[in-house]
Amino acid sequence: MSALGNLTAVTNWRSWAVFRRNALVFLRNWRTAVIPPAMEPVIFFVAFGIGFGGFIEDLNYGGTMINYATYVAPGLIAYTGFGTPYYEALYSAYVRMFYQKTWDGILATQVELPSVVWGEILWGAVRGMVNISIVSLVIAAFDLLGVVDVKVGFLVFLPLLGFIAGCAFASFALIFTAIVPAIDHMNYPVFLIGWPLSLVSNTFFPIEPQSQALWALMQVNPVYQLAECARGLLVLGNPGSHLLGLLGSTALLLVPCTLLSVRLTRRRVLGD
Amino acid sequence: MTTAILEARDLTKSYGDRVVVDHLDLSCRRGTVLGLLGPNGAGKTTTLRMLYGFVPPDEGTICYDGRRFSENRAEAKRMIGVSTQDDSLDYDFTVAQNLLIYASYFRPRVEDLGGRVAELLERFELAPYADASPHVLSGGYVRRLLIARSIVHQPTVLFLDEPTTGLDPSARLDVWELIDGMRADGLAIVLTTHYMDEAERLSDELLVIHEGRNVVHGEPHRVIDSVLGDHVIIVPRAEPAREAIAAWLRDRGAEQVATVLGELRVPVSKEDLAALTARFGEATWQVRPPNLDDLFIALARRNGRSA
Image (cartoon, rainbow over all chains, first blue to last red; front, side, top):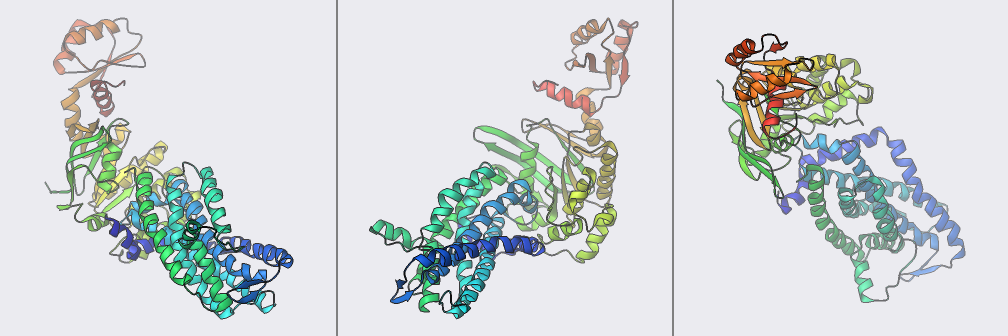
């Protein structure tokens, strides 16, 4: 299949059949699948936003003074929007591919490999949407309590933005899923890439780039763009140029990562 | 004779410098079983993976119902069912849901899917476990479910990759009955197995491959006859004339003198058997018809492998 064919497989019924399979499993186990992972950003919010934030002075964001909890709230959206699809495509996809041999069974049907990859990407992105929705509810509750001051109405846009960026994060993770020799080796993409990326993308603290290279790097980082997009919406009611930045950086990551994931997964699963 | 529903010509596949499948031809007709045999590393798995569409051949063509696989991939994949050697059941679903979810990976959709699933659960004696996890199934029933799943979309060609490996004798016989029933339904079945009795009993045609090449092909008894001849004599370890018999047979041109656990096993012609009886009338030996085990050992030795 051509590169274009690998990319357009996202529209194919086969990709959505794989997505549907994962969604059905999720719906069967939704309590265990949703509550523990969704609690993580909530705990982060309470610990950093409220606890740690008590020691930090208000910040100026786009001309508006905000407390640290308000600054962190959109950061947690980005943290969740990155972490959920990234870890879903790392661990859960690996289990389906390697231990459960679910992919082997699926590939013995009319479903082709690019659709399996797309099914995992779409599912990871939707999982991100679900968890962002939960975090958004928590932020809305804290807004009611006066802990944060955000434009609550804009929270409804965040799951959609999370889905868009989540596709890129899941496709990025699938590269590692295809190449790690064993599940223990997932520590490399988790601790050397996932954690640093989710912490230094204007999620928990602002970064002032000291060089043009660092500035350019931040512009092509969808986690940064998602954080700033969410922050622009929730604080100012306007994502500004970060909406375009999010779309651009997502495309920049998604296209090569999907093509590479298909290539590497083909080698790993089909031995070709 | 009906035309082949599956026809592959000149299949060739290499990995690096190693030719794994080398200009292999095979075909399978509706209502027949093609037994694909060969020692480990012979190229069976690679051949199957090309036929499923997992990997493309470097050379050669694969046709399903007269149409090229490479040009009609989706239609061809709708026609084939695959029961893999490894257990690839979806353990996140129940037994019945495994059939339902698998059917969702095919278009056009299976008509009256509920009825089809109920029929398969009954036929494969899985109905009592319909709502249970596959985890509760024994090895034999896991294999039943794998086979039932592979035909849920009513394919016309079925690939069974070592369907009885690891099963007890009773469960093996049950799977044999199921395979025989599916053949009677008109399915074209490609079967790989390491059990020679299974291949001999179930296959209408055999294709034995070694180092990726077709070594011998045809109906089982013709294949055996063509390679081995009329009889196999077995000289026990304790027979004092054992070595003398082996030397005498070699002198008469016997190439396939095998020793299995100290016993001498040699395929012989009617004429050789008569001469042997005249020459070693005092010795003790058994005579039986040759079978696929003998063939497999003979081919392995002919190709320089230890039996």
